[in-house]
Image (cartoon, rainbow, N blue to C red; front, side, top):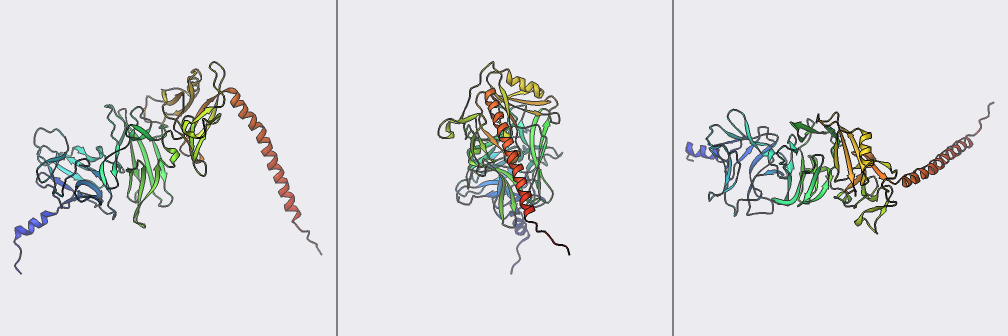
Length: 458
């Protein structure tokens, strides 16, 4: 057999690169891929399962047997008709994706006017693709331009000085990476909460931020710990999450149905398992229970209920709930404490008030329906010592958490007579319940004694 010439062998070696970086001298061709130094992630060209014509360039888990794409560059501009694509590093330090006809389908925009020798695009084990200058400076990273997925150590902006808030945007379908109507990110009207939108309409909303800088979730089945951290960088708020060492592959994603999922890879079942989902149950969807109604997750089967002092406004909850007794402006109204609540949307944020001052802010306004308070002295913003939220008019998009977990106290304004009636009912019920418990205890002791047989001593 005639040995192959050396130049042919070299061309075969270069035909399918698999290191972690791309340079001006080393483009990425159709059959090439970059692999992060630890082999965790790969970047290359892919075609979705049910598509034979469209090709994309993206990042996926290299060691997970189920194809799982965490970032797509040209999601709305695929390479058509099976045409081979090429990803190159330009002389101006930009990544440029083009098809076989030389048409540019996607590019970064670093606005470098002069050529820079030695610039490289590097894929890290975090799943972040970074353009790095010879001096080590990062001038672009894929983490700043997410698609539908957030990975550990990715920084998600909650508020920025320039007002630009990037969102996760779901795929259009299970095999279609194109942008859909579902997106998720910080509420542009308030940096206190995260929202899933369907187009321009809210679909789900998180609880407002209560000032906690760090929160942790322990997953008992696998034993891993997820830590969420809020960071203040010069007045800008960011959220990031980390996982404990030895944890399985984990990711947050917004699926094509508009459901936010926190997923962990289960190597035993070779599948992704969700341990957090929103909205779930169905009554957790935005304003599903109407004004003054709330999704009661404390029930065995979560359902809509009315707040204390309210009743359904119709045969179902399409119109929410109405007061049993109207508030009278100028009269002495009282507040009922509702514990473990996801507080409503559309609040007025009053800064740096004590609890009593927050109460008074609501009491002196005839249109105030409720308020909530949180101490931010251990929070990230030195200027904000407290968080006083005031609601004027109707209360929408509330929930009651099981066992009070994740919720806070909501102080609901009610007519004094309504509160008095509730107190009177408790005054009647509590003594009755206490008497029944005492009677049951006496009966139990008597039954136990009657079952003890006398023992004769000889």
